[in-house]
Length: 104
Image 1: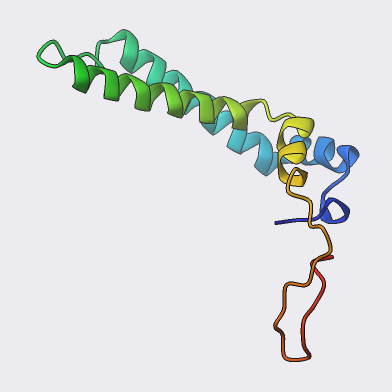
Image 2: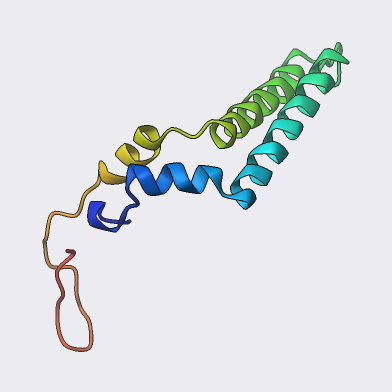
């Protein structure tokens, strides 16, 4: 897991959001989310023969939409606070060829 000193700054994150590749990825996620919404509106996730099957289909689509939303509108604090919640404590984690090493 990355350590906080290895993480990008908020300024770097903002610059990354403006990168053309990032913009294309975010646009792709927007299109995919809209496709799922259109499929839902068209009844693709309905199953009149099985409530369980319908619930599973809807849960999968809802989860996918949530994941796409996180790509469309990433939030610096949400992403990197989660990464640093497990900040290494400095305990020994070896072995390595030269002996144990610090997690830092």
